[in-house]
Image (tube, rainbow, N blue to C red; front, side, top):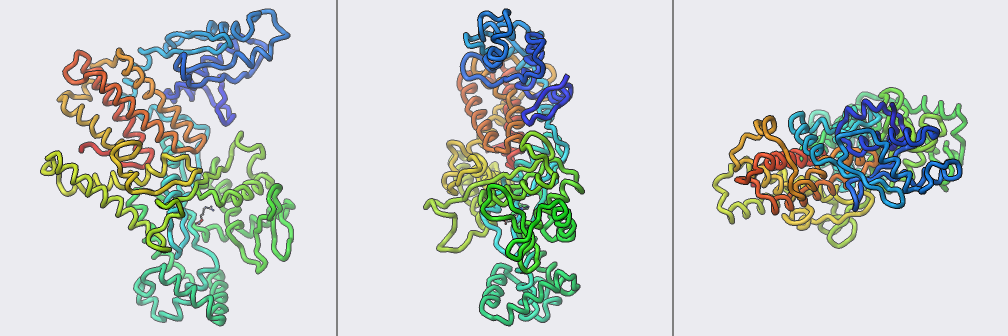
Length: 606
Ligand code: ARG
């Protein structure tokens, strides 16, 4: 038995079932059987199962299209799509998942899930762990290329977005048991290094003994050397010579280059440490040795042509060609990306290459992927087969004035300062809150600090991730640190409150998981329970479409559904106490997993 995933890749159904969490997939499998029984002559009809808004929890939408297929050929379904729907419902194999079905006139099969099954699934997850709800994806290894700032230039808010979005996607794929290569494709190669190295040699002849001290602030150093480069023609010439020395491997130039890279790296690491992001650097320089061979292959395949002294690949639909060798014979961003793509496919055996950059680079990636398809590296029918490459584009970060985000005047924002401000603000507010409710004495300095970090950095991440990534978003400390509404602060506090409900009950939840039994008696309990079991299919959708905002949406709705349940159902001291505590615990577990996937550290007390 095989089923078809959204990507059109055949997956063994047993494996899918092993994933256990994905309700939509499990229902699809049931309807697949029913479709085969109902239409023995039609092979490979893909079941169309979707979440339903009205008459059921889910619905199956195959009847209409099956009707137009079999209309003239059969006498069995005289009643039209409605009678096909009836048959599909009747031919479903017995399953504990489904409580009941009903068929609409147009043939839609509405499905109500069994309360018992929902409750049992949640309790099983509590016992076996949230790992059992991980999606099963048809990929074993992926590269996520994200963050990727440029050495010696400033790391800006665009790189911050890339870092936050890329890390989340990597976490979701890792949770789905994909081997993820987290790649920091830093700009550590190129003509600016000739300028920087030459400047270093001339201004700080004793640079090797002076170490980091010679360069000091790398951005100021960059500016000063750029100024000299633009104004002093003979320096410019010496700088261009220096590039040749560096690329030729001269040890002294290599040492200077390494030192410059190291200073940048330390700055980047300060940001990564605050955000808790792990990356493995393989900068542009790493791929340099592979470029010549890759271009040779593309030349032999007839892709590369001469144009105005440069070597280029013409790509249909693009007014300008993809320049792979500059007029001066040098390689560039494009040649490096071709070599990197080749390396990832052939040496690293990645099946999925995901690139996270601003949407301004979409045409670069479109040309890159088109070239790879023409070279036969990637299948040409996009999005249906692996290996595949995806560009995860995102919009601009705007300031309160709606313009490109900057601090005072034209100065760029130092990311470390930005993150520190988020933390400091959240600390001030947290202290105020604790003073107001008389709890400040119960908090150690360390706890305050850790909570302020979790909330502050979490707020920056969540404010970014909750938007559809393609849109521009407005950066506002006030909005992201609001403790009401769709913010990390609100969600983290909501989680802490659930934890405190459980703590105050005085019950041992570990024990309850084993001996208690979860029952979804009240309507609001059922609504919450249904939302919980939909976790897996949402994560799978995020992975498939590379849209983290769907998980933020899910998380926010989860907290709303919890609030509704908690408002209408007494937990502590009620006859249903142990069942309801289990539901609280399951909500907390799923919320924590959401936080974890979004790169946010949970908070347990407020
Ligand atoms: N360094 C580039 C920039 O700052 C981003 C690199 C993205 N990755 C890639 N393989 N091109 O815009």
